[in-house]
Picture 1 (cartoon, rainbow, N blue to C red):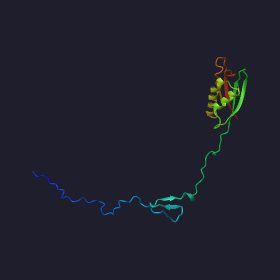
Picture 2: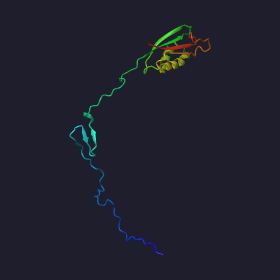
Picture 3: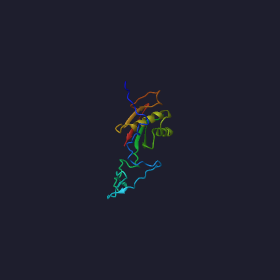
Picture 4: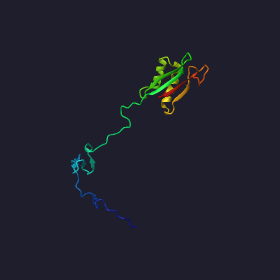
Length: 170
């Protein structure tokens, strides 16, 4: 039986490298110097060493950025009326402004309680409904809601006994 013979190590020729004909780079090369950009006849276009044009933006017209609203724009205040009965059962219309971005529903409710116009027990419900009317679409101009302070007494939504209403006015 004949076995194929393999060449010995001494008979083997060194393997020729495919890129042997190309010059080799020195081992100590760390940085390849880039060519300086060349300028075309059009002074706005610069060709880099890779010959990819880019536009010099300092001499190209750029239209101004137009915002829908100026940076100093503040939305107009919202005029509101809180219709609520006081502790003597008298119906009061309390007119005030709400400035979006400046005022908060909690802050306004706290001021109303501090001024003695709203019972402290109703502060949270007034603040919640004030926030609700501010957040609702502009078509919603009136909200009637139950108060906490009069929960034990006779209530009537129509005559605002145990209830209050918030309205957006012009």
